[in-house]
Length: 150
Ligand SMILES: [Zn+2]
Image (cartoon, rainbow, N blue to C red; front, top):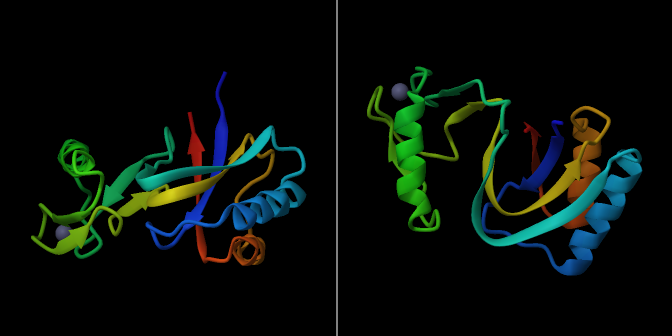
């Protein structure tokens, strides 16, 4: 049994909605994904990796586009996680560019946030730009989206 999650999260990784804003966003998502198994706002209160699960195919350097070694990446993630992802700064091993774990090119996308709107088995694909904007207006902050598979 496998599950898909459509995960929406603020573009600012430390931003948190009020409970009213979170409720409004969940209600908006119920309209956009009426057949979803479950829709919830998950408030972590600290920076958390919003991963794509088995949909991770490749991580690229934002500066030189080289493919990054997943072992290098895991090590950087573990090291930053020890400090609750207060800083995400890393030096790219390929070209030495100063970047962050959030700015690496994740394929499929992933990101970092302190809260997410999670849609379990959405029974639909990605939100369109317009739909994403509608949810962003409901929650009060621009959003990004990730499609995770476990
Ligand atoms: Zn590079």
